[in-house]
Image 1 (spheres, one colour):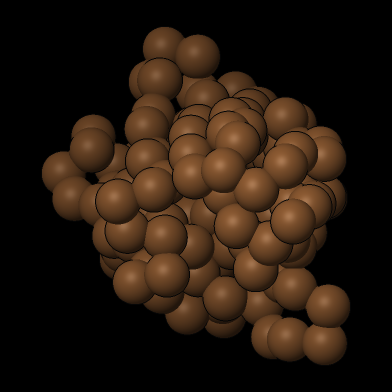
Image 2 (cartoon, rainbow, N blue to C red):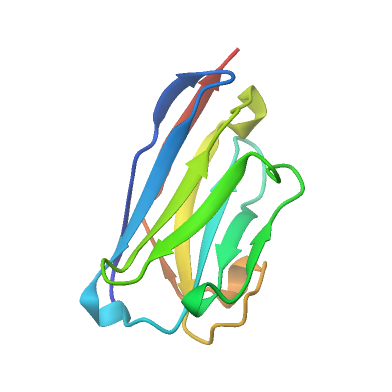
Length: 124
């Protein structure tokens, strides 16, 4: 099912921006939903945003609507998460994941392949 490699995390002040990238290996193929999840300290992993194959539809958690944007670069097999107006509560480890059934699901259990995670820390 291939591999996923995230990058772009770091430390930023509140109100700042970061762009996360998730590069999928060629074996991943193209027909999948790509999701971004995060896990904050002491909390469960939760959906942040997702994009179905071909950009047919996207989803954003209420907490990030209007601030985060998910996009896909098909030829590069890469998905981005542009995060603007960051808040301290956005601090978490961010993971990308793929669902090869392309269900557009918000549930962690529906994703088969996961990246290693990238830390995002937003200071107040």
